[in-house]
Image (tube, rainbow, N blue to C red; front, side, top):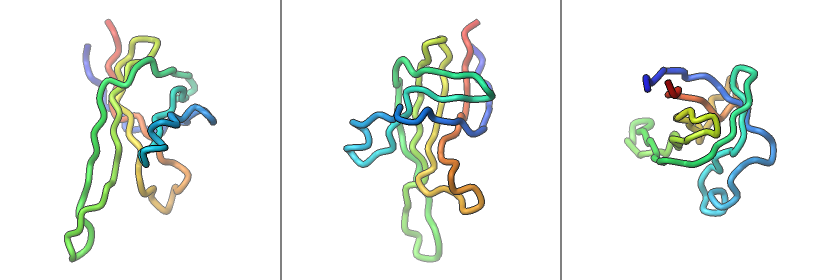
Length: 104
């Protein structure tokens, strides 16, 4: 499989967020989402990790993104991330498709 760099917003289906993750204080990976008009369903979360960054002069670390590597029911492997603190210019957009590996 070849990994494609995407970095585009996705639209999670309302009510499809993982409540167990939310209960732990993490963003709940949506089980269904739309990207470029196509709907995808998450079959399995393969891996998760977090990215932090320093801000300001204090050098304090702030959690920026939660990443999820997932396998969809269509056998695509996708890396999706959630912006913990969304940008002000587009405050509603928090979820993005970062990379995608399609089966050959």
